[in-house]
Length: 116
Image (cartoon, rainbow, N blue to C red; front, top):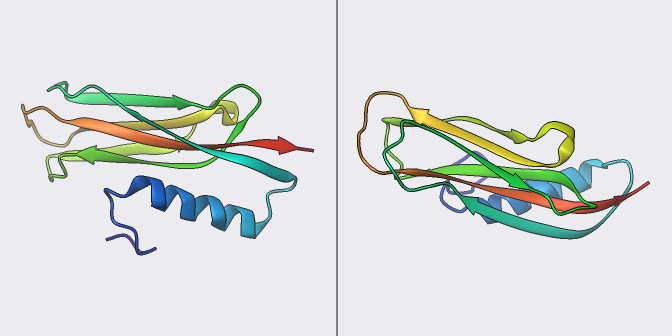
């Protein structure tokens, strides 16, 4: 369980909690129409994986998250962050030690229209 009370496999509720925290902190503009877009990478034995979840045209990323399946110590999330220019969410994961089995990384982007 993460410090905010979310379980690692429940990425969308965690991502929503992060977005609400950003709203409460004040994002400098008016936010509307939150969209949660989830994408899974391939389920295979490739030792390095990258998933990019783009936001729809006219929106910016306000939050996101990533997970690895299966959750074992041989795999690690290397990066989970907004894409350059706020156009989506990037998740990068890899094998810490050789695994050889099938696994995947998934990501969710929280996108919204931002009015000046």
